[in-house]
Amino acid sequence: MQLLDTPPVWLILCLALAWAQARCFDLGLGFGGPWADFAGGLLIGAGILLILLSALELRRSRTTIMPHMEADRLVTSGIYRRSRNPIYLGDLAILAGFILRWDAVLSLVLIPVFLWWIERRFVIPEEDRLRRKFRADFARYCQKTRRWL
Image (cartoon, rainbow, N blue to C red; front, side, top):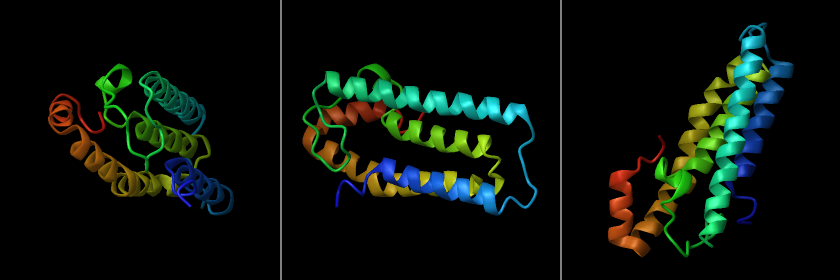
């Protein structure tokens, strides 16, 4: 069941909703032309890059990428120097990018909803586990590195 309760599953669900909204309920709304395709493509590419850099850093540190599992190490290097949650930022960028590319204007509401859900369901519990396990190191990391940007 934990495999189904992962951020990529929630991202795919939001993407499916955005796609369906764009195809079935567009109401004649759109972002307007090639700039949205370009910006969407940039966001999708940036999101994929963030996820890949994050996964590489976690693998290099020999700790888990799975959100419900206990981390073996506190990773504060690489992309994790800039954000405590670069994978989730990547997910958000991918969602925003596809919403732009698909002209799914009404689906813009999914971005803050997805952020709220991911933060409540994954980020806060992960940070609580890290706080209990790494105590002072995690506290210092939180002082130096913001949760998102």
